[in-house]
Image (cartoon, rainbow, N blue to C red; front, side, top):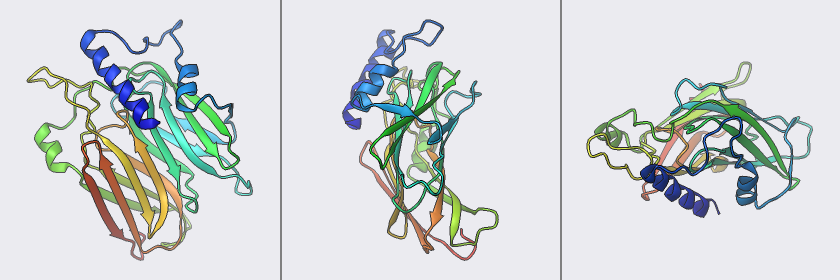
Length: 276
């Protein structure tokens, strides 16, 4: 579903850039609202419930750089709630490929916060939709003023990006008052990758650079899934995911990423007594 949806929108987005047409109208007081059709397409018209008390989204109202807009998703369920958040979908309504990412939360990791950086192409609503173990969808949204993020030139030149391709860095932080290998933790995974959107122009050839991005990322502590990410062109250059989870006392952390050209990147880190 996501793959077909992305491919159709990506092609349409590239064509719109070439022909001068727009896939979605620029946001404004009387702007076309794409959300009803997006909800029908992405979520198969399933009922949406108010996400207050379930999911929160945090983004700057006016972005400093439309190519690297920070976004944080938080689960709000109390610890004694029998329900569990299974996955969270991030939708940037006015982007050429609106579904930015889908996050699947490991069944035992109790992920409660996810932060990353995204491209924003027009003034837009941004929706976060949580699917819970009760089978229901819960939605919240925010509004962001930014434009041109999907077509902004890459920060790194082609040679530098090639040399960094697939390089992974991992950091792990102990929460205040928590032991080094147990309790709530905060971690960060960074991947060297151009994550080309397909809407950026080569400044020398004046041709569009083909879309080329990390579309899958999976993270484990030992063999227990922590987080799986399905990404698209809206995730910024050099993908950076920061998240909180509950340690199971694992001695190693593993990451596996794939991109749209079939490259497979894998890395493993030992977690020592300092938690790093």
